[in-house]
Image (cartoon, rainbow, N blue to C red; front, side, top):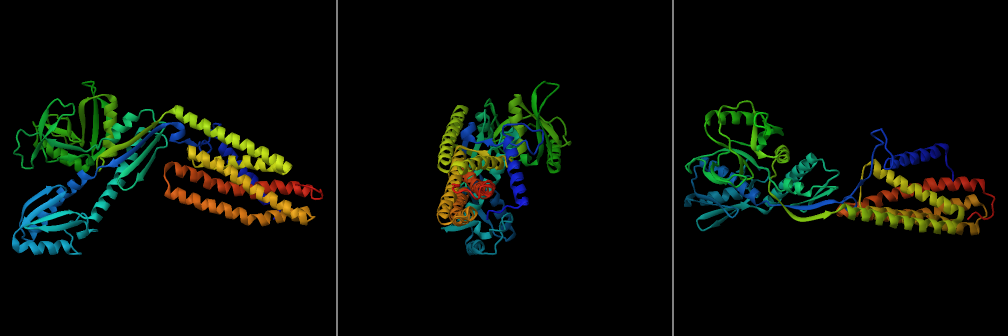
Length: 517
């Protein structure tokens, strides 16, 4: 147990020096990219913004049901079943059919093999439910369909929120799911929370539609306001092209008018549609509609077949940059509402860091003094091990560029306590062995061997708790469990390799001394 091979000694030294070097990168600057890593400070230490967003799935449900009306009409038309009075009301489709077809409709929706909706073949009849009331049929999303729709919306919204925040360049954002319709966003060090709120609050649903002079458009029409609320215009419901067809969007300065504009590039399908629409619509106004408001309505002077264009609307360079960012990142599947917001100022962050460091220093000094007085030279070995344990722990966190939070600091402090506990168990066991064993080498070997079970049991139990906290907890709890979990491994390494190696070197040279501890 006390024997160390030369290979093991060299391995312990190299591994320790490696993590010491990595940890030192938090204080020093290295030209090497691998070594130039740092621990990131969390929201509670650095300051920043905390936003809890809720997804409003109501428009998504209505849009999907609206699309489903087309599917229903086309399918039953092929079956020679005439649907009457089809309308969308309160997130339900309502229609009627002649009496001779009513049972056939019910059988169809209850058929497990039904594939009325080609876009959702997985769910088949489970995607929707149908009820019969008098002569009317009511179709709405089933419970399973709602769950799947919410999950899909949340996954898509999470990705788009991440794209928008990454485009701004926010350092180490934390973007995670909460339930099945909420998203938590933590932005450490954010100095412009209003801009983030503005970007996340916009759905960025872009459409290109013609302005009409009357309500007799075969596709239907609706009144929309211009973004500056200066006037209204009647816009066709026919969508010529949507934001899905955009490949890129960038803010630019128009050299002729010296005006800030947003230029865009379309994919092949979008370019074809845009070219056809501008060819047949010369002289008409093309409304560029963003989130239900007209941001620009230029008159088409010529065919635009190049697959690129520009949006003007009295933008500042900042607003043009934000609009381009929104268009590049894509439209949210549903509106996001900010239901909780907290801003942590940098002063509070500094106070948190200061309080955490003071607590760590006071606890560390008290532990060092106690161990030194209690175990003399072996107390010195323990204290050296404690310092190396902390440095190795910081080195691992630095290597993975982890985000350190105030609960994380608490996890580090608890790690110090557990490391001391392991050394105390070993040395107290060695004292017991020395009472019955005159050979110092055998007594120390037995002390390490017989205390191992108790130390492993305590650390494994704590590790299991840390793992459960990490996977079941959130935000601050994850930070605590992460540092605690890593701290358990570094503690075992420092106790059974570093401290034991130093103990072996000392005991081997003083094996004939009467009282070693």
